[in-house]
Length: 444
Image (cartoon, rainbow, N blue to C red; front, side, top):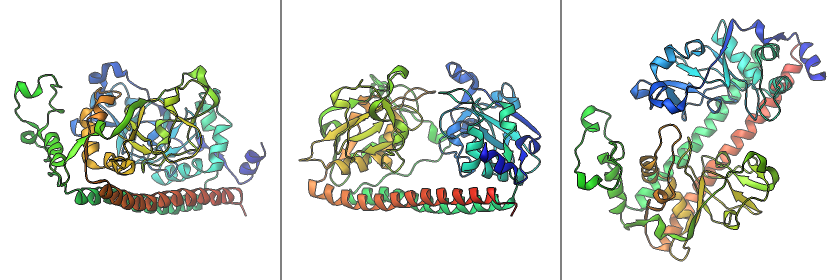
């Protein structure tokens, strides 16, 4: 309780002093997707915020957001609507507790049961409280109030009792740290995005521009013979998708199916059951694969000895996520030690005498492959990509020397981007420590 006493000595007030009202959301049944959910914003969807959309920087991450329909937003989830000046706080789940974010100006959305929306009297108050709760001290004060063991949770009385030191300097320091982090992340994103242009230019692949989203461009005709034996849905049969495949096939070096680059089998990972976890084996999971393709070795599962030998990760394995919100995320394994492949991921090795593994990995990450992956996803609520769909992705086939030259350049750019991301994270963590010092010395 020494930390609590130190915070209280700085004139802290409980969170309830800053909140006008508070409400939690719910998760409508995904079985009745058409009744409660929407595909995207263009179809009238309202952003449905989940824990993964909250961030320690205080901003909402909306690049992986789900949507509910207007009727659900105004009816079933009326009490948990969130607006631009509200404070959204995580109250259940593993990892950091009480991660808090404030929506962007003009935002309109809703939340599920793992968060609460707190109405305050101003955006300034919401942003300052979010900055405080996202600090290491705020997280410790929240976590010690959580109950539930393996599935920790904060009830309303516990959440409202968290002592808050209200000092504008906390927000200013957090804002500066966030802006510096975002600046580095944007530079890294530009480096990674530029890899696509480099790859396609070197391979002589010119993509057709994506058509504008008009009724005319969403309407097309096809013949029964063309779709016979395949999917009938309009999305899969968009002319644009076929154009992309044709562009890849007609590139400078032609193309082959991915299965023609593979030596051995496409291996599917395994997700340990609850009773199989907490063992000596280290397991790469979906969240272990970073968006830049590297692997976060600090974000692994541990499990008992339940894996087959071919699920052990080997040097130059290429990993592809086939289920969930990040379908198509691709990782490259280049780490020493014994690790295993977790659920909802497949891995494979290339025939190295003909196909450089890093070249194949790089092309799977670029736009044509990612478009084809999204095209093949089935299932509205929890999308899935079949291993066969992965095998039939198109891969350009230049001479091995050209592949190696391209792979070397992509490695250099990727490493530069990765170092920016690592530095951004380190600087942000250092800033949080400084905020902690300020919190405990704010009265001086």
